[in-house]
Amino acid sequence: DIKPRNCQRIVVLGAPGVGKTNLVRRFLGEEFQEMYEATAEDFHRKLFHVGDETYQVDLLDATRERNFPAKRRLSILTGDIFLLVFSLDNRESFSEVRELLSEIKVAKTKLVKSKRPSRLPVVVCGNKADLDAHRVVSRSDVTEALTRDVAFFETSAKLGTSLEAVFGELAAMGGLPYETT
Ligand code: GDP
Image (cartoon, rainbow, N blue to C red):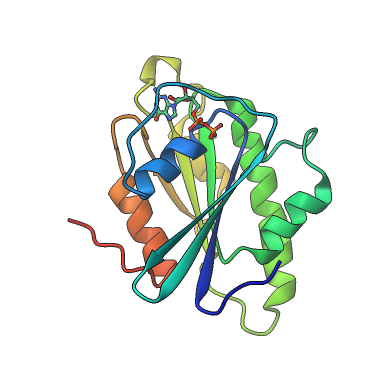
């Protein structure tokens, strides 16, 4: 698993069905899909190029029971920037994100011991904000659980809500030339 020079790795993690694929589709300028294709594969990778730079988006269905811990750990260790996704209508997916966040903190703190970044390279999305009637995770649940060094947005991959802000934040972390309009 060789990482090319100038390659930034964006790792997208979260429970199955929370909207990771559709957020990535939006990020890459593709259209939203109503269809949910649950596959046996829990890992997807996309490469894209901007000028001379290569960016890699890795997407992993993170489930404590399902993944081999090593697979999850490797994604975390090799990632530069993390997009953690849960669904506002699914409490279990929120605890998954909290779990992932503490794993990332442990891994990244060990690696950059001396020059620990003041802000973690993590963006958390509470997705499916359009399904307001089904919401079970409140904004205060989130702000109580997350520390202030983590950026949080309530998003809708379906309607496009807050996606500019999320992508702008990711871009700023990775030096991506993403342009907000
Ligand atoms: P993944 O398994 O995390 O990659 O989730 P997908 O992106 O495949 O989405 C799972 C299902 O949720 C699909 O049926 C999507 O159409 C739907 N979905 C994803 N994002 C949203 C959203 O923001 N709002 C609504 N209402 N549905 C969404």
